[in-house]
Length: 289
Length: 144
Image (cartoon, rainbow over all chains, first blue to last red; front, side):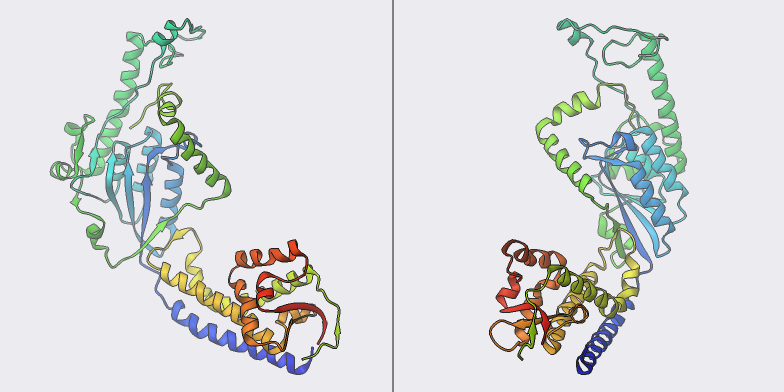
């Protein structure tokens, strides 16, 4: 390389480096500490196996827990806001998230937007404070284990359920046969146990006895504030005076497969919402909070 | 400026190699000073509050990168990467002007733009990107 050309390159490198260095100084000095992180909980809270291709409105409990762990470990994050818009979820998934929220060593505020009911309220109750809009739907402390039963329909079309079991309760909750009184009692007993655990945990979290309101009824924000289900009425801007805080949000990375998943989900939603809800999800006994 | 010896057209792999070398140099010279800034975004936290700063830094880096190529090629008919690979930029009609260097480097603003711009090399086979055609420049293998 010629000497003059070499010199030109050196000058170019030096000029660009110095320019970048002085410009970067302004950005490197920005204070990125003391952030408040928003963790969105949108949709039905489910465990990993229940979140599938055709269930776009579900949110995986592992995903939420992962965000919570990372927010907890990140020293630049000072507080966590759970942005809840969920009608609830499966018992285990909701409980897992609620338990994790209790383990966190940072202030956690639950902000209920349109709905924070049932399992989602369970999660919210585990936080340090709950904020909701006066018209948000919350509460609904109850357990549901309903499903569609096709025995009559099958009989009508001459389809017979061939029952082969090794224990008389093995197919309790099967969609292909009616429940016996005994089975109904067993299932109701399980639901009652889960309900008690749910209700007790929520009462413990809120430090008040909520058994009176643990009948599955939902409450609007204004009512919930009165009975102690939530702490504050407000919307995002009033939320814990965070107008001037540095807000960050966890955003899920979308790979090709998950994008394809979303694309397929949307089309399945358009073509068969009723079918997927009626037959794919509730053709067996499932317990949800 | 006249060419002494030309072994044109330049092979695609040489251009790619020169580009990669330049990207490494840009990484050290232009991007590295912003290292402390980028260190704040090491996970998938979506930073609402600082999104304008992230955009601005990205814009500054892209503009500086385009200027690095434009100025180097204007001053020396080569960027450092091209010099190491032994290829040159020249004007197809007259002496190389700065605007030509700037226009031919505009698509280096982003990798995707550059890729689309380079599709002409693959499909037309005349060894000129769309923006090289537009700026009346070409890359040649030889000595100036």
